[in-house]
Image (tube, rainbow, N blue to C red):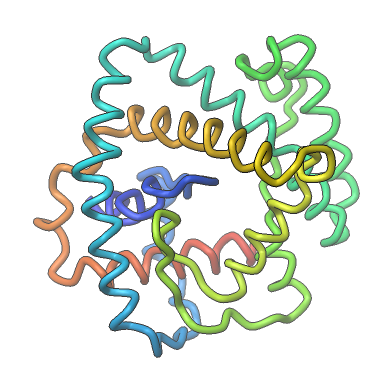
Length: 239
């Protein structure tokens, strides 16, 4: 399954997971391919890629399997929504930076509704009740909107596929989080380590079967993961 190739990388991260459904992956296949991205660090990227696969195989998946055994599906989905709700600051700011004023305001409204009526975000209330969908935008997309090129392709340890532009964007998004301005560096790292590990384990547990046949469906797993990531990012920017 082609969507598994992205999950193999994205779900080993200790920050935002790259969320891709099967339907999204299928729709991307019909889209024109993005401009070729430089990969001058392919040798290093390949090594990091294999490292990330081992992390998933020997660390993340066993932990997620145990977590899945004791955590009901409904609770896992609630935890996932809770963490999505916490990303309101980055989504609000990047919608604002891109001139999407209404979407930025809607993100604030979603946060207030889901936090107050949805048990701090564990239950999605804003979309079914008011039709307010999440408008996911990150700083990597904002840089693209302002004409910044992707730069070379990168595979980051634990974080998976990226580019120079998206790596810069990821750092900027992290700096936007309110905790960055009120906690010491040690406190911030400790809290982020705990919350992001929980988020990734929870998300991985929701997608255990997506990894079983990755090698069977791709002759070049590294190249397939790269293509899927770049196509997905191109699609997000176009939208």
